[in-house]
Image (cartoon, rainbow, N blue to C red):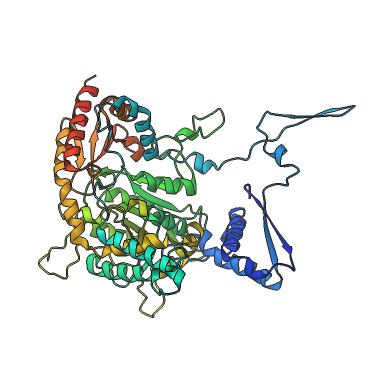
Length: 577
């Protein structure tokens, strides 16, 4: 409501069909954002299932009320910035003034600037952007070296998507152009249009086959998203509340070191600056002693040992956050979702199957969601996730857990090298109860469609067509590419061997190393770029100050060996001071 005003007025000249459902949803969400009482009064919960976000669930009830009014008359939704006559005055900076002179008086008018969300201001600065800016800042110093500055920062791969992805793109573009002649019935003629919110139907069908064959998930609900990051944001917006009907703050668990974008997603939804890294601006005016170390109300950060989350800590938190109300006969857990990345980002650790079984059972017992980010499913270097009966051809390559409370996230960005196409997907269980009542996975999927339609509507159709083409290359094509990383991984592990503690290298594409006591990881990373021509991620952005994260998949093997030599020299010289 700070950003805009919404007026509803009768307009006999405007058809109701001009008012899209999306604008109605926007209005609904704005009203709910300004009134937590409305959100609570319209909320619903399922005692036998983990709670979903009442913000999302109540959208249906609010939307129904709005549509009833909508159907009675043609309505005109006017989003008003400001009238043209007062536009200049409203945009003046704080402290500036406009002098209106008359024959008798002089008037000073002062207006303040619109404010920015404190949640956003307190969110971590995107470290990938910061590192790219740092590389650009020092690029001129490395102009004489044709190779320039090597980046071991962002998690990307050195290969290109499979030819089958480009073939699908080419065919779609050709069909679209041929449609001008009216002689084409192929899907390519529609590449410029929306597709269903949940995804391009042929891709959805192929993904369901893939999920059963390669991941052991039977007929799940599938939603295609603009990358795995959007899939996680969908989960945050669908599952987390500021508080529930009983006043309990809903919480998300991550483990340290964490994937920074996961924490940023919770921060933007809930606020707070105490999760490592740096905020873009002080969180208070003139007094940042308290807020500078404040934590995110909805975020619990758990410890790890060598990259493996501490399940004893998790169990203690699940016990501590249980609640019950005898008057209303309700019970639940303030922890709504536990987040796990496997193989790990930033740890580079593949979690053993036994651990995954234990955390799946633990979250099931306590009735909380387990969000599994499987972005690096193709990078299980030591095959720790393989089932024991690997001689059976029907055994999934990367088995996931087909449970109602488990939400699985996947991506085309890593294995299929399609980061720029922005295609990920989320899979939720379609299981029903014994009396054929829809399960919690189905309910979450239905509510998540609201978030999907609000954020992206749908992932680019042409990107989804390319992803479908990439799938045709098959998992073995991806494995062939992943095997090219062995040389670089060994070179990076060797370069970091002088550090006192190193984790990773057996999963995903990362290695983390602990710097000597007293060495600032952000200053260290800056010096590496400027003086040694190699970029890494400071561990403080992952909640682990004094560490660095190094990616070994960015460069072809020979270049990675050169970058490793620069890294080794930088570590030896910078940590010796």
